[in-house]
Image (cartoon, rainbow over all chains, first blue to last red; front, side, top):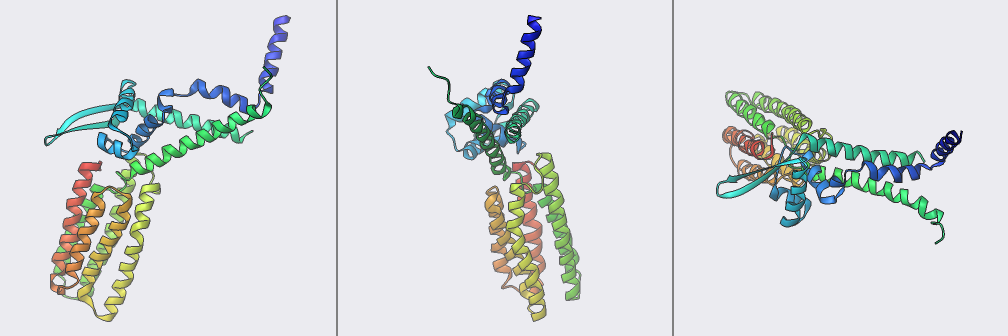
Length: 124
Length: 203
């Protein structure tokens, strides 16, 4: 009986939660922290619009430094969100990045998540 | 410690919402900027070059000026169709619709020059100034590519400059030479730059 009452109270508490509270609670749970960082989000977005981009193109596009881009691209590579191919164009080394299927899915999930947050806010 | 003020509680989701909006804007803007690498179809440019070379061959055989003009006008319409289809195909490949930022900016940058070229063709034809028509086409197409290319990869405005340079010479040359200028411009330049764009920027 006590358990039933507690379940009812919980359900009531759940109902009383404002959408705002739900947003705040749901948001961090689903959020892909790896993509949430601005530069990494930029790398994935840029690669989503291109078949491939070189290190230099990404650096120019995202207005960042060599070190910063390397570190963040490496994290995405480790998560198998992007692939990195190193080659030579003449005598110059060329690093090319591509978005993997997992990376595209992750970006789509992130977009869905952001849209869900905005939608929930509108329904308040 | 007192309870957290109610205002703070209601403020937090607004910040989250704003943050989500900001993130979506950032993604869209990054994709649009990066999309400039892909909006111009290289393969489409090459096909336009091939069709222009065919048109130049056909136009060179015409004995009447009206027919010569008709061949090039038909080629212009065909080239626009090739460009639109190729841009749409390329956009689909990278999941960017034809009317997305980069493609729209490119089209809006190019359209005024094309419109002026069409208008001036009529005016110059009526005035009997046939010899300057090919040069004007090359000049205006180059100007359009140059301004539309401001939103695209560096190779696109370079192509525009080449068209303008060729047009600047063609406009002072006799009509008999026009086949060579038009073949070099709409055929050769499209082929060379199209191949470069296709190889460098994917399709």
